[in-house]
Every structure is written in C-alpha cells, then in structure tokens.
Image (cartoon, rainbow, N blue to C red):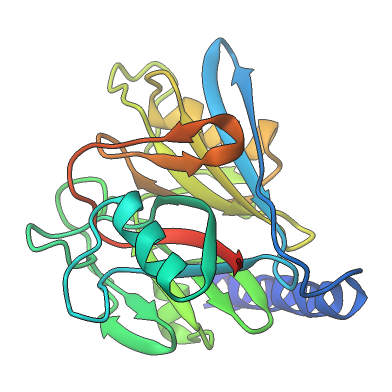
Length: 257
C-alpha cells in the first residue's frame, strides 16, 4: 500500500507542477503548434511530439456528434474544422474492441464511457502492471491501474492501456532485452516538468527497446504503451498523415482556426 501511495503522491506532484506551468506560461491562449521531430535511438527511427498542458489543448475523441466513429484522422479533422478548430497533431489513442470502443477505462470531456479493468488478461493490455493516462485541468499523469483505482484522479480525458512501459523510472519487469517480438509501436509519457510526449517508431522494436526509448531518449519516467500494428500519426509540419485500418479513440491537439 505504501508503494501505491507513493505513486499517487508522485502523480499529484506532477499535476501540481503542471498547474504552476499554467500560471507562468507566456502567451497563454495563442494557437498551439506541435513540436514534432524525427530522430533515431539505437538504430531505430522514431517520431516524437512534445506538448505542454496549459498552452496546448490536448483532447481525446471517439465519435462524431451524429454517433459515427471517426476512425480516420481526416474525419476528425473535417469535423473539427466545422467547429472552427484546427487539428494541430493527432495519434491513435487507445486499444479498442471490434466496434471501436476503447478497452478499459475511458473518459471523454469529463464523461466516463469505459470502466477500469484491474485484472490481468491475455495480450498486451492485460500484461500487468498496466496504467491510465489522465488529463485533468491541473495537467497530465500516467498512473499504474491499481494505484489509480485506490485513489482516482479527476480526469477530463483518460485512457487505460497496457503494459506500462516505464513506472517511476523502472522498466516493466516482464520486458526482455532480446525479445524477438518486434512491431511498430506508439506510446505516451509524462516528463517531470509535466510535459506530454508522444512517440511512434518508424521501425520495428521490442518492448524493452521502446521502453528505454521513452525513458532514456525522451526523458519520461512514466510512460504507457498505446498500440502496435495500428500505430499512426498526424503531423502536418512533418508532412505526415498516416492512413490505414479504422481506429478507435484518437488523441488530438486542437487550436482555434
């Protein structure tokens, strides 16, 4: 229980630091521009995007007002444009069922639409420890699922996924350095200063390598795996607008047009 309390206290400290950043951020309210760039880590290409709560408006979307699942970046972009919003950057945002509903805990615009799953299960999602990525008015946090269940945070947007890539600076205990399970992968992490990092690889990588990329190259002591085979990114500044199978929830940074 002491370990869980430490994790929750750490998450709340991160949220507090984000709130301070909100008050100190210059030019608050000016349209966001994604800070996305390409790089390599141990010979593996990847793209990372960095966002700052308080200046960047990060949301999670699933269905249009008419109930249709967005599925593709283009559909969400068009709907946002009709609302007077620009889609600055976007990434597939959660694992999902066949009907494109998010697996596990899911909160969209303050409304909980999926229940927290605390039990182990086959597949990546249930490879414990897994976790929750939470966006609140105070900032962002990645929290281990059972710690989150013991002391939930007030999330405006949230997704549950698994496995946790990095928890308090430690890699997931089940990851093997020499595993031959290699896929394109994407994830989300939170830095000590509260900034949010998306990462998606250009090359196949195993979990151990991807977790080290998030921790050692991108500086996120807490990071959550999002998905593999369906990993996609929308980053206009890099000329990137990935297409493919219909997605479930989509993380998107938006700004007034």
